[in-house]
Figure (cartoon, one colour):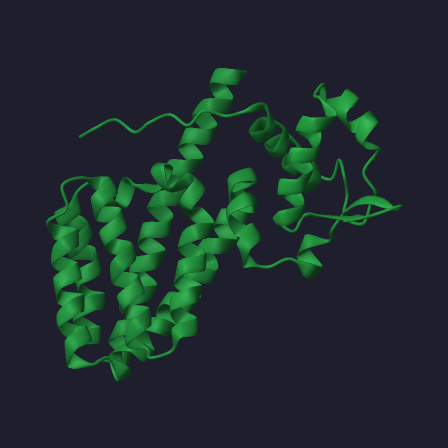
Length: 241
């Protein structure tokens, strides 16, 4: 398998990340005005042009708002923000990832129950095909992506497009750390076996069984993924100290 390319970070990328971290950790608290561009640029050791680019990105992301003659203010993202902020929050703080997985469990169980009552014959065949794709995956990455497609199809089976958008939102939320969450998919055949009871319950139109199977599957995979992520971070902290 070809090695993944290592993304190159520009000074603007690094500054954006640093400013975002300082917003999330309260260095620049919600509602506060940022210092002047001259002060900020000097404080972060960058040019004002670089600073302007980074601030523009954060404004587009919904973390800042600028008013001519007033300045740039940090938005209260917990009050006015949307789910599009979740990828940034998850990459900064693993606590957000725990909460994302909790929502993933609850929504996943609800979707499974509704999918079992509303799925069409065509969707049932598609679910069976997607489950086979997990089993036949060549590596953990492919199995993980195939698993996501199963959950997207389950959302389609509900007949409610909002569920599909919610699944996309939750997947995008942990996309920045997806590489660290492959543990449940290292053995594709085993991953397919874990997912099988959920898919079969939906295909067989057994709503209660589908709900229970979804809850178990999502809880089990969540436990493995968060455990591995926690171990990695503990190892990184030990190396730093």
